[in-house]
Length: 443
Image (tube, rainbow, N blue to C red; front, side, top):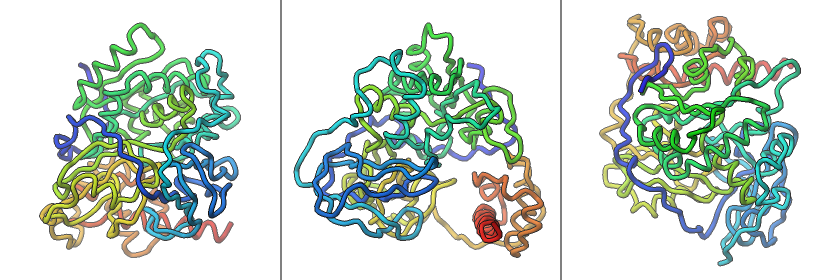
C-alpha cells in the first residue's frame, strides 16, 4: 500500500498491542451518571429537567444555547437527583445533571430523528438539524459541536469530507475497533456528512498499523466512486486535522484559518458512527467507545460506555488498578491531561483512560534549553517551539504571540523530543490561555 503523510512529526512507540485485538464490550448501565452541561466547545447546555424528574435513556435533558453549543441527553433511565456543580475533566467543578438508575432499561428514540427513513429521503438541511438535536460533537477529543462545521461562512464551499481514522495517539485503539466492527455505520455516517456538506468526495485516512481496518473498509466501500480509503504512514500527529488535510488532499490550511478555508471538513470516525446511529435508529449521543489501558490497569479493554459513567466504575469493571499504578490520564499520553481523582465522568470527548505505572512516569525535572533544535525539526506546524517555550516561561506574551504561539495545536511533539525535558507544551498552553483572557478583557 502506498501511504501518504505530512512533513516533520515524530514516531513515539504505539503501545497498542494490549487492546488492538480486544472486541468492544458494552458497559452495563451504571447505578449513577454525572452529565456535565458543558461537554463541548462553546456555550453550556441549559437544563430541561428538574430534581425529582423521571427520565428515560435518550431523552433530551438539556438544550443547546446558541449556535456553538450541543444538546444533552440522558444516558440511562432513572431519576434526576441533583443539578449542581460536580468535578469535571476540565479540572474544575462545573454544573452537571446527576441521574440515579432506578432499574429501568430501554431506549426512547429522539422524535425529531424519525428513525428508519432512508438516507436518500433526508435532506442535507435535515441532517444538520439532526446533528444539533442529537448532541453530536467531535469525538476525537476536541468535542466541537458537529453541526457548526456544516454551516460554512459566506463565500466558502465544502468540497471534501475527511474522516479521521488515523488514531495516531499512542495506546488508544477505540477507533480501530469501531472501524473494524462497524464499518457500515462509519461509511453511512460519512455519506450523510457528505450530503450535509454538499460535498462530492469523501475520504477516510487510516494509518498502516491498522491494515485489517483498511481492507475491511475498502471492501465495504467497493463500487462507491465517491469514497476513498487512504492509507497513511504511521507518524504522530498524523490525525491532526491540518496534517490530515495536507496528507490526503495536498492542500494547506492557511495560518489562522480553518479547514473550510481549504474546502474541507474533518470529523472523527466515531462521530460518523454516532451520526449513523442517530439517523438509522434515533439514538442521540449518549454513549461512546473508549480504550481503558496501560500498565496500571489489571484488565485492559475497549468499552462502549454510557456518558456520565464515573472513572471509578470503569476501573472497577476492568479489574481495578495494579500495585504499580502511578498516574491516570484521560485520553492518550501525548495530549491527554493527567488527573488525581476518580469521581470524574466520561464525557463526549473522552476517548481513553490510560493508567501509567510509576516507572513509566519517571523523573520530571527539566533543565535549560541547549539550543539543539530538535523541537523545531519535529514541529509539524513549522513553528519555533524553543523560542515559544522560552517566551512563555518568562511570561513574555507579546513576543510569544509575535512568534505564532496561537498557531500551536498542542500536539506535544516538541516536549516529547526535548533532551532537556522542558515542558514546552504546558508553557505554550499557559501562554495561550493568558493571551486569550487578555483579549477578552480588552474586547
